[in-house]
Image (cartoon, rainbow, N blue to C red):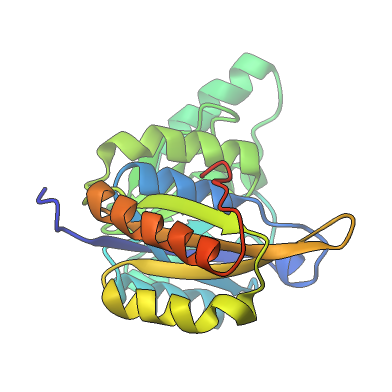
Length: 255
């Protein structure tokens, strides 16, 4: 793809347990970093409850607005795992017992000597025409319908699914990040930083204050763009800006 190609994605985090605070989501950071590695920008995230209207509405809105949509959660064996049904309704497709997924589960449960009951077989249900997403951890697959990828909510499973998917995704150029900081308050450098943003409108420039033990305060300036040379030029000027206001520029470990 062209270096100027921008590919964007959205994420739908599904689950009452996330909204209640009972469970802390850690899939967002993993997805954002993983997508950036293949040139896809995670541009929007929605957290929705385990209700049909919320899931269908989010999937339909986001799949129309972004190149890719990734959902996490709600594809287990219990009554509140309704993501597969909801994605089927979002696409206007029947929900079927996917024969490939059922065969995978049958082999897994036979191998482990556990009972494959009807509730566990629910994990083989997908919208008609869906392709499967491999689950190397616990076998029960995710699935893809057009530009929507439906993955598990359990982090170790979701991460394994994503790792297997990344090579199949078509991205644009990778977003690069540079950071420079110094013990200078945001309010002191705000005007100069605004001028710098005006000079480099294509660069995403963020200002993040920090507070450290001993009453040490300051600001980290984070810049993001696909052009390494342009980033270097701008980050050098940001360092000069910090120096001009009495700070000693430092370059934290970049992520």
